[in-house]
Image (cartoon, rainbow, N blue to C red; front, side, top):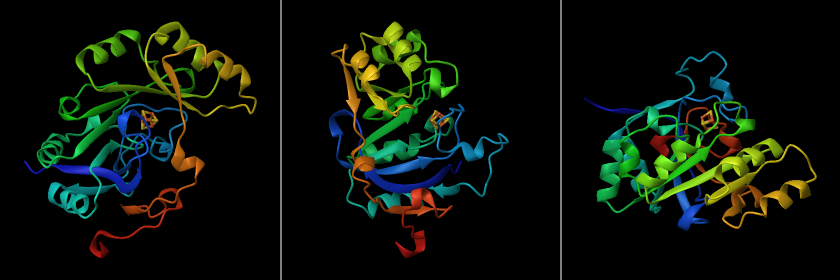
Length: 234
Ligand code: SF4
């Protein structure tokens, strides 16, 4: 069966955690998700829970491989603002592995997929209070941690309830934290976070530096205001 992949687009960015942090990567920005986080930037498609074909591009594997081969990036990140485990990326990942790419996959941990086993690194995004979806459970995290050597745990922090949930459940975990506070006074949050030596605060250098990454291809043509080109012009 010919597998087609639903993506919102492909863009160039930076690895934002793990041992590849700061290195350039090609992001395959997956369309669709099995959660509905309050802070999700792709909320536009949550409005009616229907997959809207005007919002994604369907790529065949050869098309994707052609685009990837046009760039000199060895880090390929499957995720972006979508959940890869609800599609089957195994064929693509296997080919990329054989060609010595470093494949990183992002997941919200809700659905298990064999694709995770094929990747060099899994970035597991913990859900807490501000996500507004069922919280990530300690049992799930423990299971991922025991099964995968290269599993990185990240979490978006917006308020004190998020921090409290992490303190109660994951204080012993190595966590990469993205600070997106609702309030401007960071100090009470930082005082609490900095109590945990195994937690790190992630700085999104692409956002801090306002780097204008080039969107290689997308259908909406307005992905973060980035420049777009069509496949035919690559
Ligand atoms: S898990 Fe990620 S992609 Fe899915 S709704 Fe939440 S923020 Fe969006």
